Image (cartoon, rainbow, N blue to C red; front, top):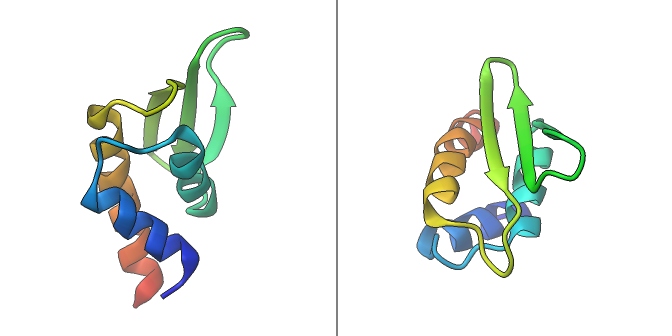
Length: 83
């Protein structure tokens, strides 16, 4: 099991305590392109093909709603990658 898969499993087990950097690492390694929506905005937009998600940068943890949405997109990537 790779470090990314371990990180994904950790996030799936406890979506309430996910740091922005951890979720950012998973999304960028899955091939999502990151950009900031507007200069000075706290929201970051991740896009890959037709999939898109906007995640606000919060300290110390990202809200659970955004984490669950990102996990749905990441599940597709890790299923395809593992087979």
